[in-house]
Length: 112
Image (cartoon, rainbow, N blue to C red):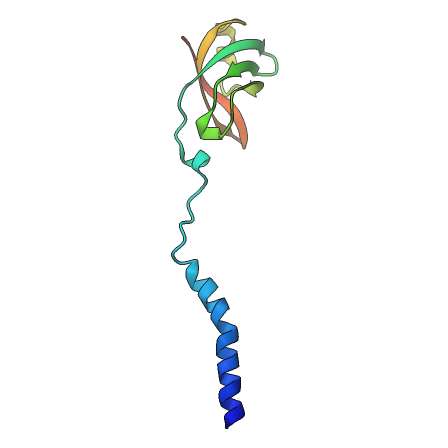
């Protein structure tokens, strides 16, 4: 009988960390990352290059908060390729970025 009690205590102690770990997940906040929660806001940028055929624009831009990107110069695909004909290299623009098919993409671009 003494061995049964000892065995029961050992099983209970062995199972306690597993039960605690499983129970502790209930209270965890499983929200998506901060970057994916933020709504897209316009970002100031300067057009460095336009590739209408490829549907891309190279922009020197400020931080893109909703994508978690710092300021840099980078080429981006443009959601509305036809809109590129309305812009020229060197123009200051306000650009809204979002992920389209998993890629950072220009979803809107307006002159400043």
